[in-house]
Every structure is written in structure tokens, then in C-alpha cells.
Image: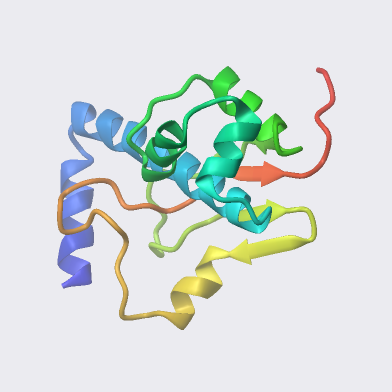
Amino acid sequence: MQDSLFEALMKELKDDEYRREYGAATAKYDLADALSEARIQKGLTQQELASLAGVSQAYIAKLESGEANPTIGHVGRILAAIGLRLKWSLGPLISADRTPEASIDLGAIAVDLAEVSEKTPNTYSAGQESGKAPRKSRARVSSQPSTPA
């Protein structure tokens, strides 16, 4: 069944509009995963992160679920509130081996998503049943201070 889902997705991605929408959804889910992981690694609740960042808990929940569509600057402000910055990592929209290419890196803590998926082979990505883009993180959050360009 996984192969037929992959084949169906590959067929749909041939359509320009579908591919753009899939890319937009994937970017929001990547951010959602990275922000949620960063918050958890910092030992914060959504309410605590919201208080530090000066936003509502409901907004943090929307960001972590992929429902919000924040500006890059707003994401930067939220991350800065907990001493982090966003590091960009680009990769193919869909990989040939269907495993995530990137990891979430929080200083010395690295969670390799490919290893996680190997340990849980009977699971599926969120959204496969609903037709939404799979939640595969490519965004990275870094504990390194940002340096002006």
C-alpha cells in the first residue's frame, strides 16, 4: 500500500499547482515539527513558550500543527525568545528512498529522522490518509547565535 501511495503522490506532483500546494504544506509541517521539537527539548509547555515569545498559546498550537502561516520574521522572534535561530536546509521535495534527508539539530542533540523511521516501520506520515502533505522535517533549529550577513 505504501508503494501505491507513493506512486499516486508522484503522479499528482506532475501537476504544477498541486506541486506548489504540496510544497507550501510541507514547509509549514517542517516548521511545525522543528518548533515543536525545539520547545520540547527546551522543556517548555506551549503556554510557557507563548509567554516568552509574547504570543498566545493558541498561536503556538497553530504553528505546531501546521495551521498557521507565519512570516519568517515572526518565526525568528519566537525562536530568539528561547535562544535559538532557524537554519535553512534545502532538499528534494520527495526523495527517491522516501526517507527524510535532514535532522533537527539542537546543539549537541540530533534526532535523525531516518533512524526514527527505521525503528518504527509500521507507521505512516501524518496526512497520508487525509491527502495532506506528509510531515517530514527538513527545517533545522540551531542553538548557535546568529551572525549578521
